[in-house]
Image (cartoon, rainbow, N blue to C red; front, side, top):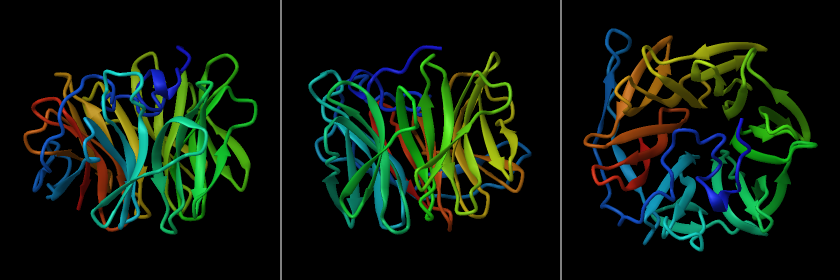
Length: 309
């Protein structure tokens, strides 16, 4: 396994954003907000749901992505100039039509990955030495989220009880998932996996994430101590990123033609979710009531955050 590089030198939180668009690929102008897109059912698997999507693009940024929302505030990251190492990936919040940088103390680069119903924000930042840490912010007070003994830690998902999930790398550069409650950490490793990352957690403590083996990348659900694979039918890779209290799972998959699509998994059935006309769509959360977040790449390969319902 390759050791993860700091945020300033690569895509944000590469270990857990596997497959998401790289904010540093190319300097392209932001595009106007997209709207009114659709979901298509995977053949014979689930009925079609219809979503209306709105782009969330930080003003003046070349690339943006949205990773979570509490219904009123969305969180994510942007970069002004993806071609420049002096243009950092930066966390932002979006509330009531207004964008605001989330200033993480001591951060050279940052990414906001989750938000609770009470407004706690979590994420990942790279310090001035290039080391990645998880962080949690409560009312503007920041604290680190670091798995004991890890060489780097990334906080990715959080529920309303403050349980945080994510991933960490050990001294041998092996990637593991984790769950943390009140400062107590538990490692998460899918049985037989070469690497594991936990990405989302609901209020019942059910966890979804990503694991890898020799065959590729897969999603998983961890519920009641039992691991269950989550693989979109006939996909070459699957990433499970978000889960709500009804057990609906959101994520993305790559088809045999190499195209990436969002999905929602509910009641044992998958539905593909694509922004109409997009080059790729990837979902990161599904909230109670069905709101979804993620990122899409348009026909000009510019990347935009999205919020849908």
